Image (cartoon, rainbow over all chains, first blue to last red; front, side, top):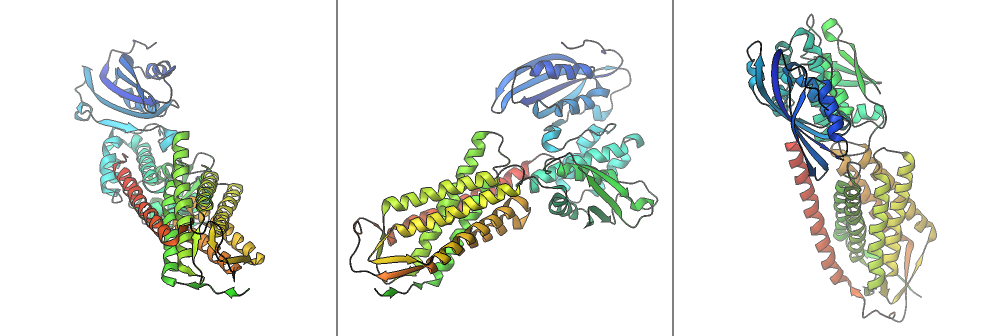
Length: 268
Length: 247
């Protein structure tokens, strides 16, 4: 079922994941396929009953480089209601293990359909995951953490990492403060969810269907745009809030490019 | 026959509104969990809890606090069977209305149906409760005011349900509870204004076996305490759950 290849070259990491699904039938086969696609092998597994259906614990081994993508793929799998993982470096084939990789953090989240966790490709998932608890602890004074993140990740991963952090933070804020009630039309959701949530972070106004943000600390003139964080934040907030459609937020103009305000709009 | 005047104890009138708001607040706390239910059991549990708080607390307990506030110059007791049916009617109809309103996606058709069902439930409970009164008077109604009382109940219920399921933040539950309180009290006091009590000569059959107002007061006090505890309990549990949510 699971490929035994790719156990040479690079850092090999052992990953323990636990998922909860509504049904156990075919779960191992379907998730095994995902594991295989990400170059990991199944070392051992255990299926057990859970009050929500079935719990599957898998110990996996594979290249460190594809671990994050595998975690996200498993977390976003439609059969998965709840996902958590812990990891550590199992063996080393090549360069020394970075300190970050030697840590064994635990990651837990629910799939994208439930909590708005998308996977912006290229994000430094591990760094974002490590930062998120601090971001939650200091919320809404989160900009120092985001600025740190901007500098900590590579230039290529910067926008995607900000986007991922935004989505996770937005989904979290939604579950804390806005989850009670019916799903809304996009215009109502902007007014009743996005604007109050953003007001905790920045000065924001809703004009028509556009959100105008003033004085964003992530978008200084002449610097790089931090707009992807806000796009992710809006998408995370609305992932489970809209009556129909998947939310997608875009930055129309940015203070860092000389505009007076950062302007965002939503398409759903 | 001689018309009898209704006199109100305004402290108890105010208390009746507080009871209606408290019952609505508790009910809406449960009701807002309906769209989030993951299993049919959770969904129906939330619906029944919300319906019981709304029917038994906001509507029924409010009605009898308001009846205790009203002095008609004649002693009254309450028919046990009709009184019990009036509670049941209020709970069932409130549950039905909240089940319709508590769908995941908001629809105007649902709001119209839910508001109508809830409003009719409030009115049905009231007039059944009135019919349960055993006293030496005859009651006649001004049907235009009766119709108005039903319209008030339906419209205000719709407004309260819209607020509950569509707003977010402080106004969501408190605002909707305040409006639902207006729905229940507005209906009740308009319904009472529609009633004329005419002096009769004899006590009806079963008067002695009826429940006395002071006994009902004890039951209502228990209901109000239960609603307070529930409202507080739900708030604490929700606050705790929020605080432990992982990002």
